[in-house]
Image (tube, rainbow, N blue to C red; front, side, top):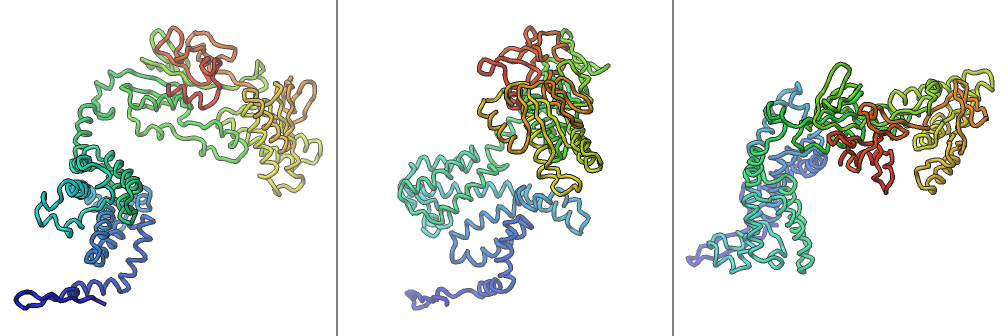
Length: 590
């Protein structure tokens, strides 16, 4: 029911207040219909999901202007500011609209392309002006608080602007007047209005409003909660094109243009850094040179980066190769100073500062070698066909094929001894790879292949882990080694420590005089560095790793760096850095 009040003027005329206008009644009636209910129920859901976001925000915006603006102007202004931002700038990438946007412009549907281009034009043309007006509105609220705290708005502003009604149209920030000095508020307001250090100012206000209200004893109400998303807009999206921030950034880009904007002659004159190897160390080195004034060439035998720690999951059929391999070109598509080349290095000429790719030569100013390690059979390379190692995707797929074929052969075998040979798996080497591989095979046999075979139970498979040292994981603390052995024993893995393998062939392995009949043997016992030391003609340790200084430079060759498993450096507690991915990444980033 509408409250009606009557005011008698001096001349006897009466004015009735509180009666809604005919147009307002019509709009309010429309909002109460099914269409209005649809907007109130469906549009918030669409807005939360990010589907048809701009249209849902526009419908809610119109409803706010019709229903809330006449009676709740202050609350409505916050809603208008937030919803208007969504209408003008659209949803972010974390929305259904953001997922569909790349293909919508080319969709063969009526008016879809026109609407997509129209919305993009709205963002491009109206977005900067809207961000500018939003900053001015917030700055006006801060200035009003500051001026009211100095002498009172009635003395400093025109009467039309100093009325309480006019103040209601400005954002309210309770507690700011008593918590900050007027000059500080005016400074923040000026910075916002000019668009200078906009994100920093917004962050300061977001921190000060709630903490200030709690400290200064102000009432913590809904106004405070609405200020936080309001200030979050300039914090997340910046000041926009109409700002000093934008002008300063543009001037900086003109003074220091990005790499892709440089003409060809200046680019050719930049130092050329060649990184050999796209592993953890090579990637870290290439990324570390993102902002360096240089040209980077990343060389690898494969066009993908392999996450080696999960190779055993591919070998035991828990993961597909695509889940642990990422294309190198995709990783560096936004880093313009990196060029990815596919090739295998066959030599290095440190005198001419060139590397050889078969008949091709590439000159470098600085060289980073991160070629990792390969299998080492300790002089018994003839064991390789019978006991494959695990260093690449091809190795993992080969081991997967052997594992699955072993179970299939056991199913079709008519001889119990032959079946036991197929169901016996020997892993040579108790380092991280061997332990992970043995555990994964045990889990595959006990859980992954349950009820898939009829003539035998896969859980009866025998998994033997052979380790020459007195414990598995010898480079780890003894407590972790003991925990790993207990976990393997719980999975049914036989761990043979202080035992060396004497012979390996297609029928099994000789372990310190004990012959283990097994049709599947896997090698995880040792690694040897790539032939980088031979390329450079420098000293290497028994594993073939190049001895480098604390800065990872090759002695006598300050322009050559060797990192990761290819190098040995006494930089970890006085001893060699471990051959793990974190060590390689730290070396590359250095």
